[in-house]
Length: 601
Image (cartoon, rainbow, N blue to C red; front, side):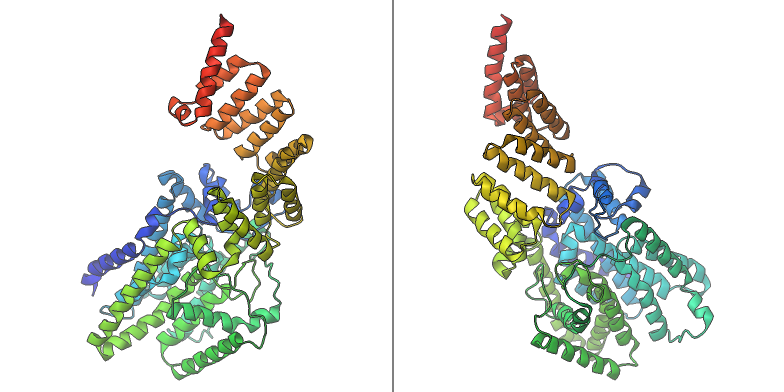
């Protein structure tokens, strides 16, 4: 078997890479922007330990204002920082690394399955996992890397825990403990690994754990877990991610069977896969609840029927344990109770059940079985290719498919923003209206709709939506955009003092946003306060030194002051190639040169 590993790995890596080929030309999408593309912990060099004191999505200023996300994955940001050093802020590099980690997880799964089954079973199992379209969201979405890494390191920890040699027990335990600790600092899902170890000892090894010495083997893992929880509490002020859901505890527990069956459906029948926004059924006595209870009862009957089959009982219960963090038993702040990417971690254990089924099928009728398995592998690969190309490739594709194809109005605001970027104001307003009606408590949609209304010369309507947004919870960055849009609205109706105050609020909240400083500079200029205008525009240029438009505006301000020499010097700093692209800057420069030359003579 081992002599075939190289061939099997080549097949495995080639087919998965082919299915994910569209990801190399993909873009940053959704949470990739705040967590990766705009994350200062990635763009700026910091000490290694500083990453362990940073809460995901929370700036230093927001921490001072007691804003928390509750997400703590410090090692993920370190991998992003390494990516940035290697590729710059190019999404292709980040996506390629996600795929590389996915390939490594698939190979590790192959090695685990190979400990139980010989022949082609490990390859088929790893291919089904690596090509399954349910995993495409975790792999193509850069910000979902935490799901891949927690799974990879958890699988590595399990491998060394389960298959350590008796005469090298200390070494294998140390390696397993190392990967367990690393997994914890990638995502909190690794908390479920210790119960899975205990389950493995009881079901597979047949140990009843009555003796004290059997429990002592878990002591190092418990110490590592306590260390992680202590640091997490220190940074986030919580042990678990905060819950903001409106459902009560009874509802969350009652609908657990519904969620389990939903996840099993998208594993066994992977159709209609997208970025699910799923809520609980409206009624307790609904058909969804009935199907959930019926399906879970059937599973219980089958498990009892095969209770002596270790490689059925262990994978199924390990899958359930791995699924526990996303069953919403403990309320979370997630907008959906179902997500494809959350399946990545529990699925690695469920694949052990799948491998047992494949082994039995191949033993029954190998030739005819392969005639079924190969088309299934091809279908999974083609389906993944389609999703990588049309769902997760770029934001326009994703948002258009979600809203148009799946009537998912949660993304209506995002689609409206894309139309706005394309200057398609009619469609932008149409989907902004849908967004604010569907999610009235979404501050971002209100703020962005206001920006469109300002562009449409309807500033008073914009201020109404900004007032609504002001009463909602939002991040510091969102509040900065709110004040910036207020400033623009006030400018359009001639309330310059209020515009300046709004822009000043914006730059205090987001001092690294060049656009906010530029708008403040423009507001000062409209009031004839040219010295302050120059200071604000100069600050904007420090942040965005390559901006031709900023230099042109600064030059115009100097001209209004009568400082023509300074205006000329500012324009001459624009590279000739950039001036040629901006006719206004080139024309202004020619006129300034004539004027300065005339004054000199």
